[in-house]
Image (cartoon, rainbow, N blue to C red; front, top):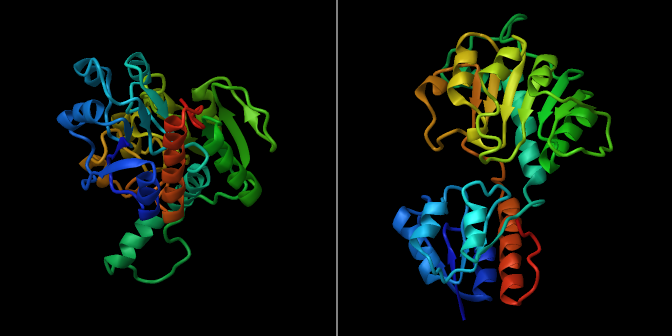
Length: 317
C-alpha cells in the first residue's frame, strides 16, 4: 500500500477518499511543514499532499538526494511554495487543483472591491465601537463602483471570472494586462504596460500567480501611477505586491484604499497596514467554503489516484 501524507487537516470526505488509496498519515497541525518535516515527507512517503506554506525548495530536495516520494499533489491552484524544477529533477511529479477555486476566489475579489470602495470595514468598526451617531448625507462617502473601470492584472481563469462579475453585474468597463493573449467572451481592452493600466482605472485587481516572475510586480511605480480616488485589491499571492510601497501609498493618500486577502509574509500583517482605516483585511478567505475546499481536496485525491494507477495526471504542472 502506498504511504500518503496529508500535511494539514482536510474535510472528512477528502480524508476518507485518500484512505481508499493507501495508508494515510493525517498531520494534525495547521502550521506549514517545518524544515525537518519537509525532508521526512520526501524520505518516508510515496505521495505528499502539501499546501500553501509547505516550502519544498531546491535546498530541501538537495538534502534528500534519493526521495521515496514521487508525487506532490498540491492542495490549491497556486504552487509557488514548490520548486517545480527541483522536484522534477528529483523524480517527482507535481499537480495542483485549478478550476475548483475560480468562482470562490472571484467572489472574494468582488467582495473586497465593494468593501474597500464603499468603506464597509471602516463602517463596521464604527458601529461595533459604538461610535455611530446616526445617518447623515455626507457620512462615509465612498466610491460608487457601478459604471467604473476595473483593471485586471492577469486575465487567467480567476481574472476572467472577476471581470465578468464586474462587467455583467455592475456595468463596469474592463481593461487588463496579461502574459497570455486571451479570446474573451465579454468586452475588454488589452493594454501592454502595467503602469498604463494602473493610471487608467478606478479599481486595480491583482490576479497573477505567485513566483519569481511576478514577485513585487505591483510596486511603488504602479501605485504612483494610480489615481488618488482609485482602489487596489489583491486576491492572488502576497509577494506579488511590494507591501512597503503599498503602505506608503495608502498613508500618503496616493490611492484611496485597498482590499487584501493575502500578504507578503503571511500570517504576519504589518502593524502599519493594520493601523490604516482605508484598508480591508481578510485572513486569506479566497476558497474558504466547505464545498470548495472539499472539491479542491477531491481533485488532489484524483491526481493521487491517477498517479498510483499509472495514468496521466489530470492536473500536472
